[in-house]
Image (cartoon, rainbow, N blue to C red; front, side, top):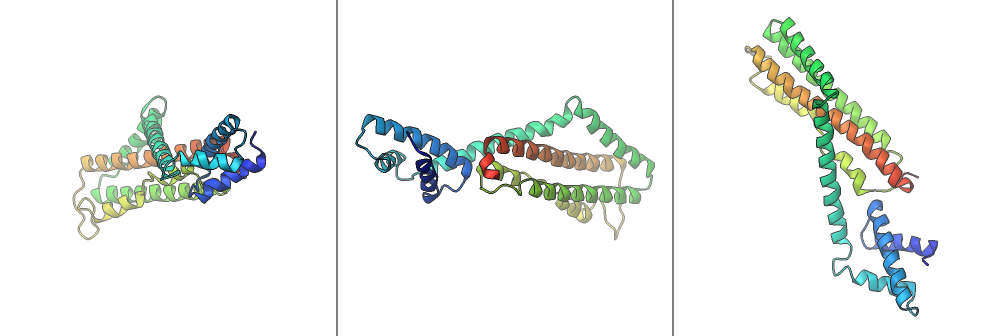
Length: 228
């Protein structure tokens, strides 16, 4: 049987061979320990170290590199699928009611602001509010994962797929749709389309927030020692 000391040495062995992600280390240690026990049961003369070298040799010249790459690809694919699922959930019952209410409210304001100039001002303020909301969300995310002590591939996905709404504010200001120097006519159709685009950005941020919460809960349950 593999002892606790030997288990720890397997973690050190993984780190020595350039596996710095704790979640991958856990999987590799489980695999290595099982393979080592099997080798030692078949040949009682083998020491733990000898069995480890034999098992590691079976990974080929690249060592653990392919395992890490495969794990990254798998986690990334799963994360993308989950993010899209959460995004589209805002267009299904019951969340679609909230989505439609938000869009209707913005359109109603646009109808109330009959002058194109004030519609532009409102949309810019709305874009700025979304940008601030995204910053607050990023700060909360950083606080949530502050307790994580060990790097993991699974939690690195929290940094991907973030919508930078501030970029939209910049585009909006520099576009021909809205120009402070020459206030150009903004028809209600343009207002409605821009509002729809901003709603999609906002929902993307909400979906990313939901994804982060699920990711944190799952990582904490699966790898509690990474947060110790």
